[in-house]
Structures are given as C-alpha cells and as structure tokens.
Image (cartoon, rainbow, N blue to C red; front, side):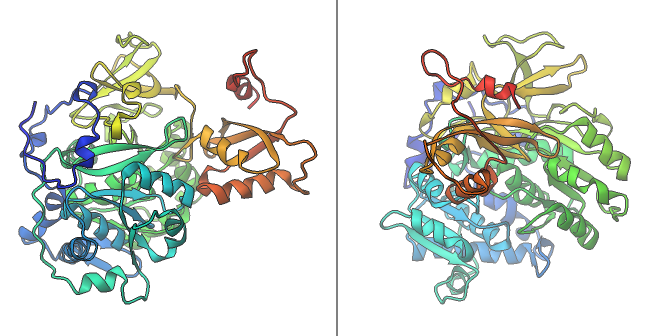
Length: 537
C-alpha cells in the first residue's frame, strides 16, 4: 500500500462513501512516473507547475475567438477558486456541479474547484432537469457553475438552497465579473493524493446513473500512462477533441493530456466532423480525438483536406471497425490510434500507436496496466478464446456508496463488461458488450432509461429498447412500443414519440428506430425476452 497523507477534506462525504477497501481493485504502480507524493493537488501539477517554471506565456487554450496562455488560465482559475470559497462558502470536499459546453471558462471552473479542494462533477450540457436532479442528489452537490445558456434545466433540478454561479452572461453577478474582483493568486488546498477530486457519472445498464470516484493521483496517472507512452505529447502540440469534458475521454484529451505536457488545446463548442477538419487546417491541430462515427463522416472530405499538421488521431467510445480504419488510412495516410477505456478506469488502458497498430485490433495493454481475458469464474482463457476483459493498473473502479461495486470488481480485477479475444501477440480484439449497454456514435446509452422516458407518454402502454446494428453509428437505439388502446399519435407516430423522448432526456439518447407491436415477447413468468427483439434487428 502506498503511503498516504491525511485528507484535506472538511466535508468528508466522498471519503465516507468510498466502497469498502476489500472491494477495491488491486492498484499497480509499476512505472517510476507513477510514484506520486502523499500530498498532491493535481491542478498544481497540470497548471501551476508550468507558470512556476517560466512557461506562463505559452499558449494553453485556443478558440476561434481568443487564446489563453498558461498564465491567463492560472489567473482565472485562481479567481474562480476565490469566488467559490468567498461567495459560495465552498469548503474542501464540497461537490460542485459544472455544466456547459467545452469552452475556456468551463476549464477554468474545473481547475478552480480542484484548487479550492472541491470535487468537480462535470455534466453533459444536453442533460434535462430530471437527469440533473438525480445527479445532484447522488453527488450531494450544493452548488454549481453553469454556462448561462444552459441554466433553465439546472434551475428546475435545483433543490432548495442550491447555489448557482453562471458565466458568459451580462449580469453583474456573472462569474466572469465576480472572479475579476478577486486576486489572481490562490494558495491551493493541500489535498492528499488519494483525496477524491472528481466524480464522473456513468449510466450503466440500468439507466440509473452511478458516480465513479477518482483521486488526484488518478488524474495524473492517465496522463503518465496512455498519454505519455502512446501519444508522447510535446509542448508544441495542439490537441482537439469532440467529446464533452463530462466524458472522461474528453477530459483527458482536452485538459489533462495537453496540460500535463505543457501543450495547448483547441476548444470547439460544436465539434462536428466538418468543423473539426476545418480546425485542423486553420489552427494546425496535431492530436485529434473523436469517435469512429466522426471519422467515418470525414472520409469523403479527407482526400482534399490539408492535414499536414496532424500527427496522431485517437478513436475511442466505441469499437473502431477495420473498414473505417482502412478507409481513413487510404484517404489521407493517417493511422488511427484505437483504444478502449471506461469511466470507471478514467481513460484508455488498451491501445497501440505507430508501427505497433494492428488494424482491427484495439491494441495491447498500455504501459502501467495489465489485461487478460477471463472465463466467468475469473480464470484466464487461452489465446484465441472468447472471454471477459479484465484489467488492473494505477486507476480503477470505485463507485460512490459502493453502488454495484462487486459487479465491476472481481478478485482485484476491473471487469469491464466487454467480450474480447487476445491473440498470440498480446493484441486484444473486441467482440461484443456483455450487457445491455447501447454504444451509439461513442455515447453510452442505457436501454431502460429510454424505456422509462417512452413510458411517461400517456399513449404508451409498454416499451422495450435494444441496440440495433448501424453502419454509420455502430449501433442505434431501437424501441418496440405497444400503444394504449385507442391511442392516436397523429400522422407520424414514431416522430411524435421521438420528439417526446428528446424533451424528457438528453436528445442523443432518443430511439432512432421505433416499431409498433401488439405485444412484447415475454417468458411464462412475464420477463421480457430482449434477445428475441435483438434477433429481429
């Protein structure tokens, strides 16, 4: 067990709600760069360190309208930390909800929370009030920082006494105005390396969100494994990524990785494939990260695009088909770096780059991690045989309150829910998901959550949701619906229900295919037979 420092948290909610240590995975610290000191604030390592080393004038965040240096981001993050402590009464350990698209003030807010010893809970900007209400309750959050354009649903979800600071608006109490009145220097809270600094939500297969808990050392570990050994960034790099910062994939690629290396990130609020291609040409992006769906959408335009600056492309969020890899490589010569990670593990733990890439394979265990394919009893299977992917490394699963902890952690291993085959060269090949999770265009969507949204419509008697194969998105959400007797949904009944779901939950979760049936297939005891619905997709 690594030496640990006393917690700096005054609010000990996260420490008290860690799962029992007997249920933690085994953590590995096999690389010298993973030997972190007992007292550690990851914000200081990612941000302050560069300014203290005389690199404050280096560019840090780039948008189409402005550029922030490391000194700029440090000053604004310090001002946010002051505002949280003085204006909102934050004490170390408080959870702070963050809501907004990828922009500089969201990054400054994330750093401000962590500098002040808080726990950052970054959420998807498209989430609706009902989804946010669950997250606020689970995280025990009492305050939030929100882009002013996304305030309505958060206000509807906020319990009595919940404090919200908005940014980007014109009000005199806007965070940008409040922060400007505070000093640009802040003494970071001396957190322990194993103090929780962020909660990341994952829906799981039930549709009920679960919060994964990550320490200060975990944040640095993903940079010192995957980024350091696979991406190998330098201060001259300019990163860009499509996932929101609420996705740990996006947080790593847009904040942790570039700033660990003293590099810069280009932030785009609406990172569509055409706009990402334009940004590569306009700004000289060197490291791009997005989902396979986006790479497929780019293929027709890659031949004419000027991509000379681009040295690395990362794909994660869903499996990367060999056909997509080949098409991108044929069009522009780029060799996409595939990878698998999870919210529970914080980022990618299997990957390969450069000449180590084997198209159609996810890759090998990233330095710092070990992985194997296991049978249902946790025993390793022979190469070439199907089994459950199991992983160990410097990061691992800790669910808040231990919610379903033992479903993910077995005998010290993190068991991801993915079915894999390992070949004789140590490369892992994805086969399928072992649960009911639908992975569509890089988004994890739980079927039961979509079913609940459909069932809130008065015309719906029953609903079942499964994933259906799709050439463009990998999978799509498909719903089979039984209507109430005499229900009338108008001329376009499917569209009526699709629009309703979009109003109830995040729009990306809506069923892109809806079939109407007289009854759902069930067992004699009434249990829904999802496999029969999948057989018809």
